Amino acid sequence: MAIAIDGPAASGKSSTAKAVARELGFHHVDSGSLYRAATAARARAGGESSTWSEQSALDAAQIVSLASTEFGFEPMLDGQKADSEMRSESVTGNVSLVAKMPAVREWVNSIVRRAGSEYDVVVDGRDIGTVVFPDAALKIFLIADPAERARRRLRERSGGEPSAADVEEETRKILLRDEMDAKQSGQAPDAILIDTTRLKQEEQISQIAGLARAAHRQR
Ligand code: CDP
Image (cartoon, rainbow, N blue to C red; front, side, top):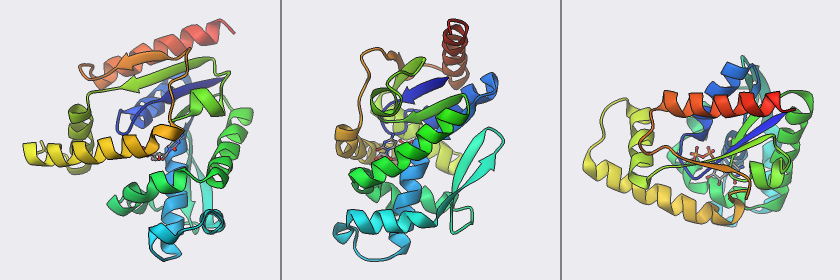
């Protein structure tokens, strides 16, 4: 069984998907982390991002391997954990460019579909309910006000309360990434839209876990 959680940048998909997977005993698959891993791998190979070819990105992605975690897997680069590199500003700035490449999308989709054929999964991303698992048992589309998304992302990074100027700058970056990702993102017609702007994280987790349990019972 697959549960798809899609939505724009920093809408809380990954943290929610991880918590829902833990509650249900499913595997969590973060498709964005695979696009980030491919981007970090391509950056390691060097050169201006404007010159990166599709084939060079696919070749570079060969250093990506998957390590098992308690509730799924995480991508490694050259056999090493590389979380901060994959979440760095430069990777975040270039990931949309790499994610536009059809060969990279095929590479990610085949990894994600393989996980879905082996386990019950909660998968988060941009096109999971539309392209990767169009028959998912439950599709959620998470949205939140852009400034609130920026605040959450900044708090996650620094732990403290961000300044108004930082929120404004981060909101600009988030909206730019939404725009760059627009082509590869989509809300499935049968997805349930949840606006998390005024929800606590525990509320959105229990709401989605409840919907997932109901979908599971129906199967
Ligand atoms: O930072 P955030 O949680 O919003 O993004 P992410 O899930 O880490 O995804 C990083 C990037 O990967 C996105 O900005 C998209 O360019 C790309 N992506 C995609 O194209 N399709 C997906 N299913 C997931 C991510």
